[in-house]
Length: 244
Image 1 (cartoon, rainbow, N blue to C red):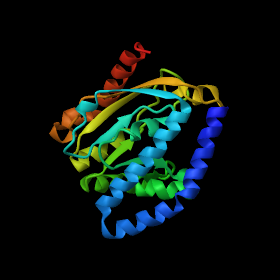
Image 2 (cartoon, rainbow, N blue to C red):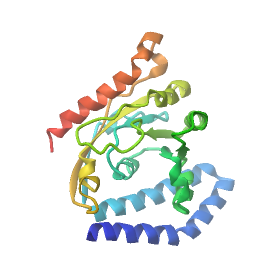
Image 3 (tube, rainbow, N blue to C red):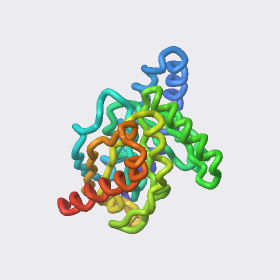
Image 4 (cartoon, rainbow, N blue to C red):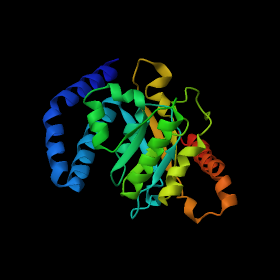
């Protein structure tokens, strides 16, 4: 419980004490959006690293050299833990927005930082609103912002299994003409979700797969895109599970 308490206290203090930073970031954004993107990325990266330090998480990253550096990408991964966001965000090479559930909008200050980081909020019960979120993500990518999405739609509570991936999310990369980077996260549930309410030391392996370019595929190949992405994530997942 000590680890959870340390993380909770730090997050509350960060959100409250960072109010002046939010104001400064808003002002910076009025004059230089690129500078705001870089500074917000640095600030949140630091906060996430502190949380991971308190959690005692050891994260091994594989395949980072495969991530294209000259274009935004759509990160697509499996999802078992709140910590998935922290562990992946601290390694992004450019501003990256995450697609989150709309319920996150209820948390003041946190939602302000999320918006600074180009996060988008998905209403999973409203198809029309969901399409608006997908279109917004496409525009973000066209503007040079990477997007990260967990197409299972929610955290999977069963170890070594995968919920059905919502294939529509892959349209973001196809319409933006940007690559998809499959992302396999192994053992993340061991940090917190597998033994609530305790936060425990855990070793997590995250591997980034070979980029997939939907705009280079023909119609038949695009029909199998979801299976291709899911298959690559599963392949990396079970391969790396043997390394724990």
